[in-house]
Image 1 (tube, one colour):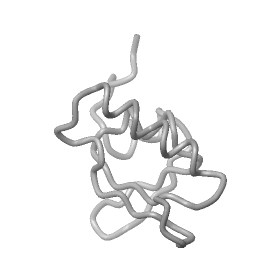
Image 2 (image 1 turned 135 degrees about the vertical axis):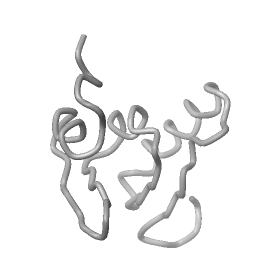
Image 3 (image 1 turned 120 degrees about the vertical axis):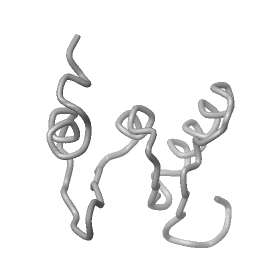
Length: 84
């Protein structure tokens, strides 16, 4: 993250990681997000929804901007995923 680049690409950075390290990764992303952009691919939408300023779903060759949890449920997740 300290390299002189405008963007950092993280491919599934939370996969197989212990929760304490996920928290550390999220903290690093937040700390550097004012200096560079992050492009994160991950199936773990819970962590992404908390740190992302924009979410785009890539599915079947198309892009869909996700504005909220319900959009994610409508386009990707099973109905009732976010019901409480």
